[in-house]
Amino acid sequence: MKSQSELCEMVAFCDIIEERAKKACEEYGAEGARYYTDYTELLKDESIDAVHVCTPNVAHCPITVAAFEAGKHVMCEKPMAATTEDAEKMMEAWKKSGKKFTIGYQNRFRKDTQMLHAACEAGDLGHQYEGFPGGGSYALRDKGRRGDHRRHEQGRRL
Image 1: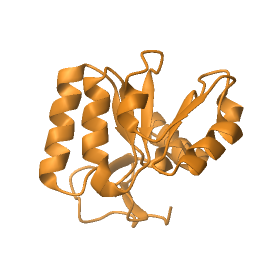
Image 2: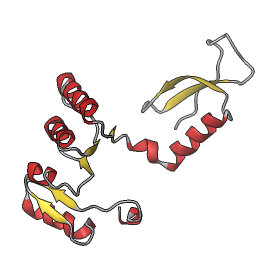
Image 3: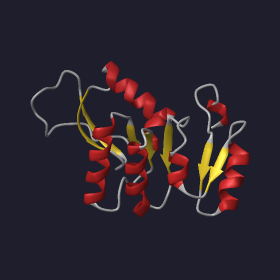
C-alpha cells in the first residue's frame, strides 16, 4: 500500500493479538498511525474514512455492520458472509449508510482483467453473451453473428 500513498493513508490497524496489530502498524502505517485490539474502538475514530475487513468469514458481518453504523466506507474480503442472513444484514446496513461498499474480488484490479474489460468495452472481442466469473472461461460471439447462441467460439482460459 505504500505505493498508493498519494491516494490514501493506512492510519489504523486492529487485531485481537496486540503484537500483530503493532507490527502491521509499524510496517505499513502512515506517520502517526495507531493500532487497536478492539475494532469498536477503532471505529470511534472520526478521522478514519474507510475500513478493510480482513477477518475470518464469521466476523465479517458484525464488523461491517458496525463500520457502516459508524459512518465508514467498507471493503470486505470474500466471501462476503458466512450465511445468507449475515449478507442481508450487511446489505441493509450499507443501504442505510449511504457509504461505499465492495467485496474484495481482487481480480478486478489485476492488469490482465482490466485489459480484458477494456477490450470488451471497446467491442474488440465481439458481443459477450455468456460468462463465468471466477470460473476461468468465457464465451464470445463474433460481432457480425446474431441470433444463434448455440454457435459460438468457446472461451479462452483467463
